[in-house]
Length: 181
Image (spheres, rainbow, N blue to C red):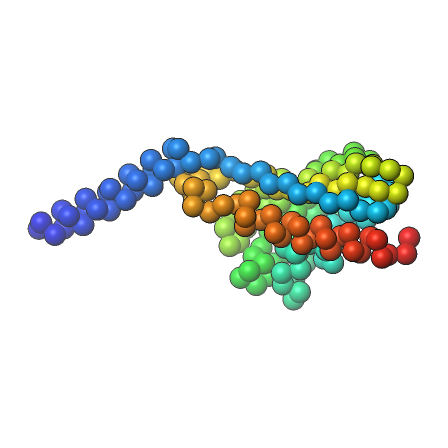
């Protein structure tokens, strides 16, 4: 009987600890990276507005080359949805363009289904630095529900996602600077 009480007390203590950590933990994260591309803002914008193009520059989209994809709507326009269902690493979900401001920004919502449910905002913002040079900023903002947000005390999303964003933006730069337009 004493052992059962001790086990229940330990389990209760662990649950209380997780809940306490969740109270003090951040509720979400926001990570942005940028790169300068030697192309006009119009050329850059016209390339990144198409979700299908992420198949050749986004590290996340390229995770599983054998994944099943579906494009619903007209790519490059508000309302288009790019859905995927892939291996354990790629997971399952969809991304949707929710807003476009020509030659300025594209707002995208990503809805994750698997390996865990979640919602993230992944905007692209472009800024003309000169007629032949464009700054591209891409990032991810998301929140985590209580008490799952306690993980943010231990998992550094900046470290986890920043490298993938940097790789993807470098891929984008290479494609656009070597592409004949």
